[in-house]
Length: 72
Image (cartoon, rainbow, N blue to C red):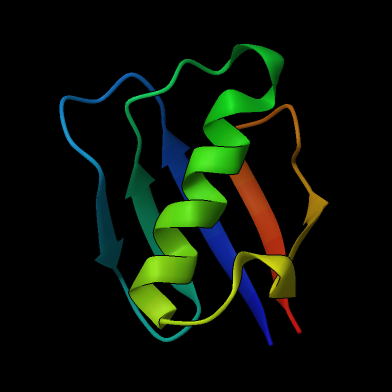
């Protein structure tokens, strides 16, 4: 399954908003530098889907707010 995610770093709270079946917005507290926001976004999505973080892989957008993420 492939999902499209818009990550919003340095938010006040961690939140996942489902737009439709394959599009999500994820707010994370971590800054975008050093991949911290990417890791936090994957953690938030894993908790939202209730599956392991290991099953998530960023396909494109590692340095962008718009990401394409594969769930294995």
